[in-house]
Image 1 (cartoon, rainbow, N blue to C red):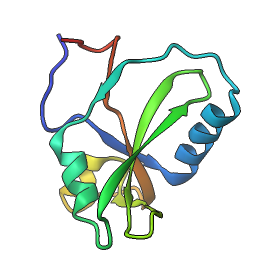
Image 2: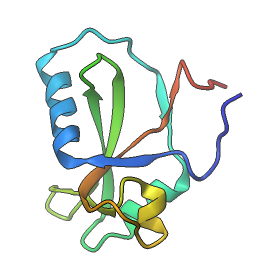
Image 3: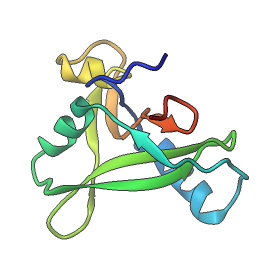
Image 4: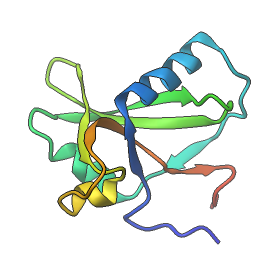
Length: 120
């Protein structure tokens, strides 16, 4: 059974997110649409805590295997995307103050899809 808690969601690099969003916009892959996506509170709190962020944008995206995703970015007061700085390779490491493995800027990803992950 799928676990729904505050930890659902992670960060992927900005470059990968832009590629997936472009895949969706260009119709490069056939994919199975989803009805909704669950994200836990930590990813939203991380985004909303960023300086200049006034809201959250949800992007449709398709990875290079044709899997549909919903990606999260912050949005500033002029409508520009604000990316999530991260350390290491995951939100958990970023929220805990970092770890080995570099870092950069990214977007929220890794929610639980419906259908497919645990629909009500």
